[in-house]
Image 1 (cartoon, rainbow, N blue to C red):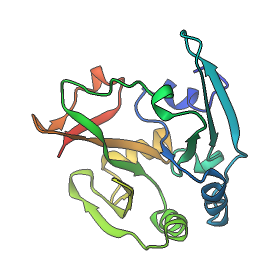
Image 2: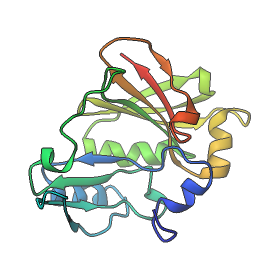
Image 3: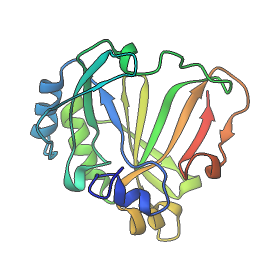
Image 4: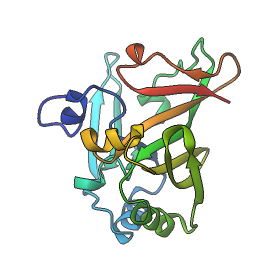
Length: 198
């Protein structure tokens, strides 16, 4: 990204996860629902690019803005077939099949829980993560889980994350078809805290 890009500043603080996106088949409706819940969402933006083979791929997205960036998703829909925009060869030797759980560090679980409960029509589940010295709310969205966690005390890793990065994605677990589970080497993931799991 360039210096005026929304991901520039977080990436200057050591890389890692900076944002997350949810694919939708109703971008206008989902953007409106996020706004009604109190999330600052930008207007839908249309984008396109021409591949080297001449095919023009097109998509539309709406970004969460300001303090909501990285805590609320940006939403995206394809205007051309998704397989034309996303690489068709999605298999990987490590067996990863997709994103399982995303952990988002937040300073106010009740506020964030209120947004998601309003949009999803369900209260979420309480979750405790002793290994992170954190607790919060978990929401299942499609095949993915999102955990919005606040530090239980000042000494845990999420407290340090919030002090340096602010509320934003902290870690993710990738679903896999077997093989070794556990954390990936952050020196090979550009600082992203990623783990393989079932």
